[in-house]
Length: 158
Image 1 (tube, rainbow, N blue to C red):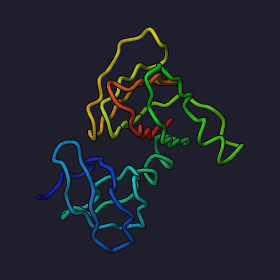
Image 2: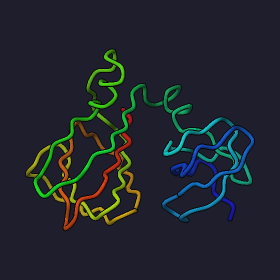
Image 3: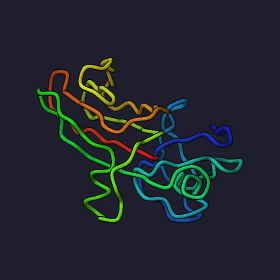
């Protein structure tokens, strides 16, 4: 399947430059791509040429749109838990301050409820193993398992 230019997805494995690898795109599901630059597992990627050639989306965002990014892998539980955007990036590099995300991708291994910015906001159900991308301003999110604990992954850019 040939992907449309500028479609964004998630690399399901690390892919070296000029090599093929597996990726997931919300519009079409899993497919094979060719890396035009080295891609790390779980990087957000973007299609840049015919025949499913991709690069890490961070190469585009850092130059043109966003200058901060964060990735968190969190365990869900039965109580509503807060995560502040930028926390994991700050733990890795103290020069990165907490920030407001403008683009966020969420995936969880089990069904999870998400609320953006405040615990009383609208509750979003994220089904297990589905990538959801939101383009909105988020400085923190609140998460809670639906029935069983899972691993919640958050990719945030701002």
